[in-house]
Length: 306
Image (cartoon, rainbow, N blue to C red; front, side):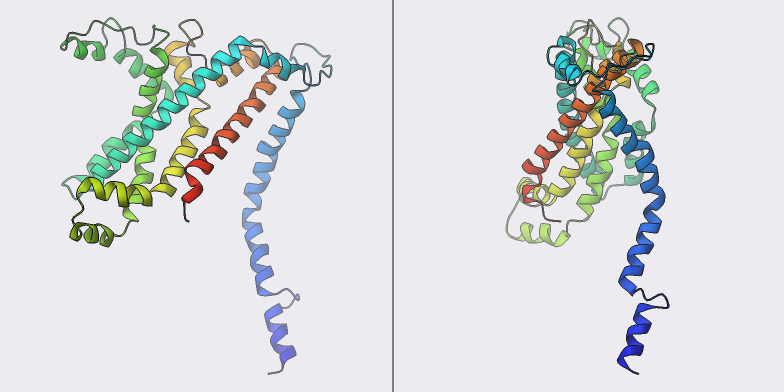
């Protein structure tokens, strides 16, 4: 077989080699998603950036260009800063809570116990509920007059607590509710991470005299760093966009103590019809999320090996 014939077979009838054909096939499979992404995400983001430079109000036909005026107004907007503070506190509490509870639950249901599968299903079930159902359940549970939480605390001599009516407690209460609702997803991710750790490492550590705490700190946690990075990054991105819980459980109150950025964005864009200013809020929030995500990669992901 001549060299020229071999080259022709590798290149195919159209003169395209195998690697190029595989690349073309990969992009053809990706094409539907890329088209959907370009039409509904990239175009929407570009429109939001454009609108943020205009005084864009639905009820007014004139939409004058205002440059950075919307962003300048945001810097002096007291409600925005309060909503941002509430959002950051909520995201920190919820991400830390879901990570700790998810990891603890994953370790518990990874042990060889009877009914392991049933426990995994029961722990994951809250994740299947809608935000409306979760909100209504916990509004009843946290009720200051007849809620079961205060009823249980009364056995320990604790006076009734107005969880959702106290400005200092409403964000922790919303965070606690969200942790109960969403820790199932991190639990599943941690289960997968734990199952990827070779059992021989624990056996070797046991032979060397390591106890359970030392094995957890020296083997489990270091090898779970990639999983931890994924859980915290996706958690921050998700919980920074909280909206349903404060809307259903406290309606942003009392006062503005449970206003979050997305809740405030809704008030601006769809109540006051200030689309230009609302777009500026959305763009700045996206930038803050990007900064938090980058910080997590630098802090948690610097020693991660993939």
